Image 1 (spheres, one colour):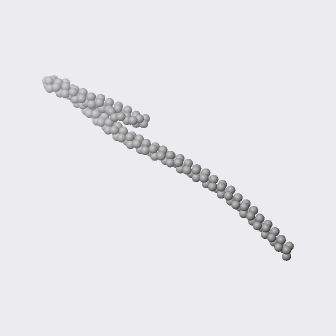
Image 2 (cartoon, rainbow, N blue to C red; image 1 turned 30 degrees about the vertical axis):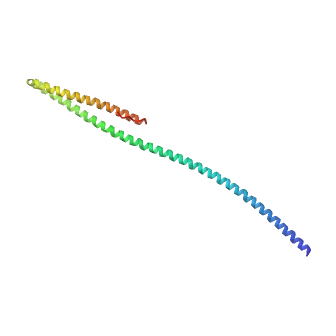
Image 3 (cartoon, one colour; image 1 turned 180 degrees about the horizontal axis):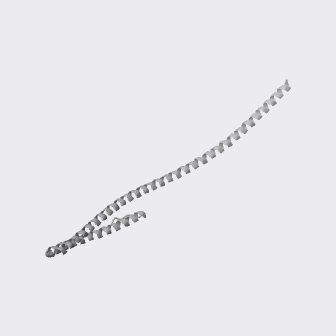
Length: 165
């Protein structure tokens, strides 16, 4: 019995030592694996933080670009409306100018036909010439205004500040 007891004790001792070695090995393996996973998690978390910050700055830049685009479109629409108004006014003045010129021509024909009414026709002609001068002055001032508006459109295309005329 003593031999069997020695063999059993040695066997148990070997099993205990083997269990301790295996447990120690698994603990070391688990600890190194946990450290690797933990370090990788921290790296990924830092990368995610960097990406989040970059996304925030890109979003802010995009919002600024969008607001600049909206402002540019609003400015362009306002300038287009002003240009259309000025163009309509110019067309109206051109029509008025043509009408006035035809009126002058008619007045001159009447003058040639009615030499007896020379005095009345002269005053009529003077009045018509005064109207033409007023209209020409108006045309000149509107042409200046059109030039100014065209300059403003050019400045707006170049993204410069617009100053009113």
